[in-house]
Amino acid sequence: MRTETNSEKPVSKKTRSRSQNTVIGKAQDDDALTHSLTEKKHIARATERKIDAIEFEMSRDMGRPKSAPPKVVAAEGLKRTEPNQFHTDFIATDFQSTVALSMPTTELLLGTTEMHAGGVGQIESVPLLEEAAILFATGQVKVAEHMLRSAIDLDNLGNAAPLAWFMLFDLYQIEQNQYAFESLSLDYAGKYETSPPVWHSSEVLMDDVEESKLEGAIPTVSFPAQLDGEIIKLLQKLNTFSEKSKVLKLDFGRVKTVDPVGCGLLLRAMRNLKKTKHDLVVVAAHNLTEQIRSILEVGRRDETEAPWLLLMEILQLLQLKEAFEEASIDYCVTFEVSPPAFEAPTSKVTTAAPEIVEEVPQEQTNRFMMPKVIEGSTEALVKEITEFAKSHDLVILDCSQLERVEFGASAQLLNGLVPISGTKGKSIQFNEVNYLVMHLFNAMGLKNIAAIVPRKQS
Image (tube, rainbow, N blue to C red; front, top):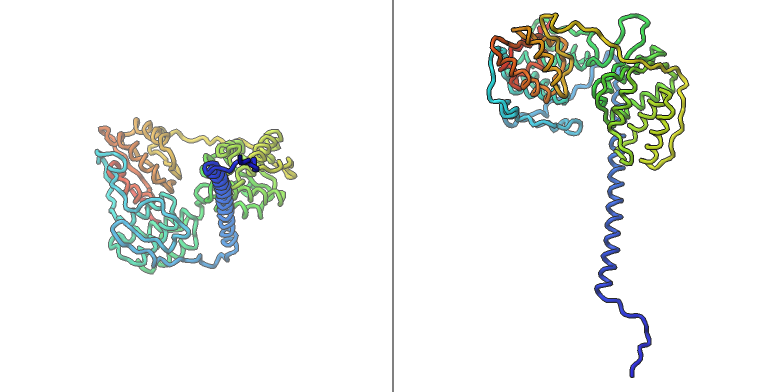
């Protein structure tokens, strides 16, 4: 009889295959985790680089001599290939188009098939100019600028050519680009042999900076509804104020949304003010902290730590130690780091509530004053206009202060005003409209429900 000398049984093919699959599966999980962490690091670095790039542009602009004109990017790369379409390859690395220039009709876009033409504005419809207005409305300011500059250089718009000039003048005025405005004024005067529009130095940066007219008053920076990369203009002004005054006032009462880039820029500015030991008057700081908290989630690592760090920076300024410690614990749990220590401010920090401005009721005036910027939901605005229309047959909407209407908001505004224009005996008139908004309204179909009177160029 044959005796087995080896007590170990041979490994079956099925068992070997199962072991191999387990090893492969574990390796795949490790690779996926490594890939996920690497991807998050790349996103974080990209966000930080974006913040760095914005700050670099700010420092470069601040170092440019006032007498030197800004760098002008040639617009030869802007070529029209099909009706209502453009190639913008020459700026593709800096600006990404988010709206198709081949737009559907207003009726298809909004689902509105019936328009009441009680008061139709006599506005020339020029597709190229309407496209530029839409780009401006969607925040693609540089693309709109290059499109208008190209149209002026090519001079192929016929009788509509002055409209392109006026749109570009309005764009430079809104952007507070005085160098470009004055350069365009010289070209305009040479071509048309008449006086160009006047630069209004009293107008401020998109209503985001409120400089007191009283000598010796505290310089004030009022932040906009969106705290994003666009606040770089305000921070430039803040830097200028900091060189002239030891006391600064920061108003966050209008902030409704924040993003990581905006938080990163503001964080750096706040830290610089701490280093220079500026005294601060902070208005509606609680509102800012609430907006920051709304985008944070404990345990979720976003592309940058900036919102967390800004939140803790503000809480330290306000000397809210308990709230700071709670936020710091959430921060260290999320990013697996040691919680930062609380540091009380070494300079004077005063908090203040938003100022209540008494306004003259709309019903006591003959016209309805439109805000400087219309964005987001227009429900409240349309409701106010509707109330105003109850006591006025001619609904005059004063747009003398209106600078920009967001693309989506213009569609909502149209839908909201259609019932008013359809009421018997009622008519709507937009007065003193800048040329960028005028062509946006034209493209969106508001000219079919209201008269649109452009602002006089003086």
